[in-house]
Image (cartoon, rainbow, N blue to C red; front, side, top):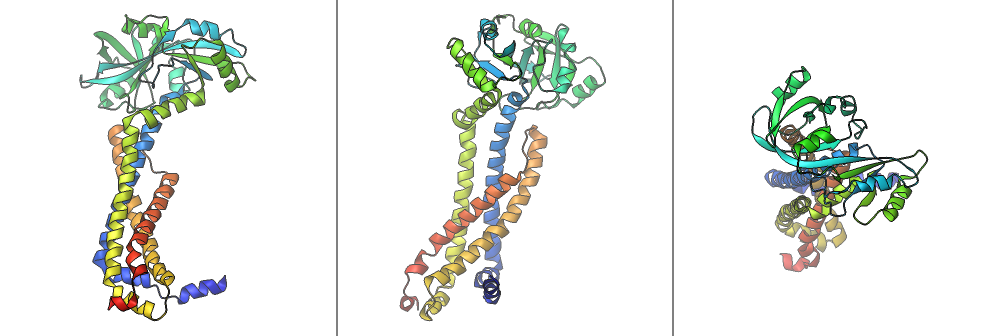
Length: 391
């Protein structure tokens, strides 16, 4: 091992010497790699924010098992089913309680700017906790009052003045479906790609807001199981016992149900995945052009090495030394720039977009692979060339 290290120390760093000799070419290469990395970081960041933001509501839902309609696509497109299924579910062994939840996406007037935007409204039984949110659970008495709603403080848009008034205990009103409502409290979930924000109220207030909605037609069934029972087994028992117009999902399956929609059925997930692929391809093209130019510029030197008896493996080692140097040096600015862009996007949209170690490692690996592919393509001429033909 020591001998190998000493051999590396004695080795002339031809790859670095060639790259650093043409500094303008090196800067162009690093800029191209950094651009490709930024593109991949942003697309992966948006994709992660898409999944995280659209499953936040699913994650904070306080239920062991969730009943949904088989026609449901995601939280913003939930078909209804009969409330009778909750009474039937209560008779299954292991079920402790079953509660109804109403969900609908509606256009409302921003209480501050009076502009119209979409918001998701949820109606729950105010006598029972439906969310793992202390802010909501401490204010359940407020939504028992007629037309009182809790407002998501992380809703996308201009709401600072309205939020300040609510925090001060002042009355803040607005309109939904030509009905005046009062924002009586605050909680925090955040916006998503499906809705700009959320409102929570009682099931009775929800039905007043949507008079055409029948009370027996519910969006979700929240099932709570007895201590000691396995949610997966109880969910299977419910699925076997209940008619085919409902599906029983464990809490984790309900989260995955939402994520699967945005991954496979929504065009947004495909677009972000395509963006990552495009960044990868752009990087390959840029690095290939740089390495190909470098090989052609030093083709006579490589011919001399071949004539002296150096094998293709040694010459390829020089090229791949350049590849590794380019990959790591280009990755540094390519990882720093997205930090600022993530912060800018997060402040502008309230989407949960952050740099993660897993994503950084993934992009670094993709960068190395990208450069290795470019290097392999660029050295084809070098491997097949005859030294005698190079002069």
